[in-house]
Image 1 (cartoon, rainbow, N blue to C red):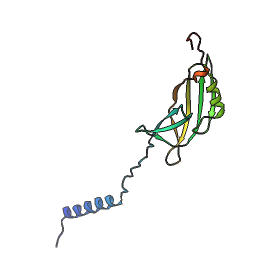
Image 2: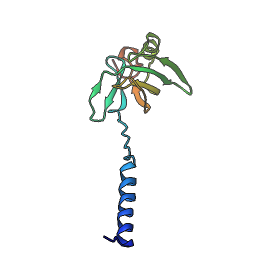
Image 3: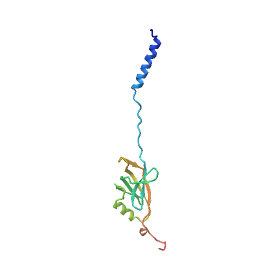
Image 4: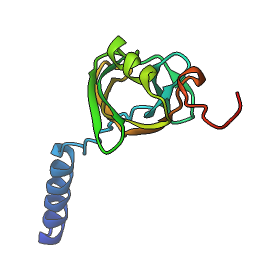
Length: 141
């Protein structure tokens, strides 16, 4: 029985390609789970920051830190916060205002579902003071 050179080459090529294909590692696909949290909102009734998911639902995630800026006449005062609720100092400053003012929450860090820190975009809001603090000149009240 005589085997031709062509048959040797075919068998050799088959073994080489089969052996190298079997020895290759499969490609690994890495999946990064994205957090559902997309922004924070200021609840002016309870005086607290809340995280909001991508569907617009408020979440009870812990806000680890943020900076509150209260813009007054020509200047802005900054206060550091470390929880969802505003500090008594922040509340006192907001309640002293006699006119509406812009407030900014910056550098917001929140814990996601896996206890990883996530940075949220800044929040810009308007604070309207209690009417008893307002100047009612010329209104007749």
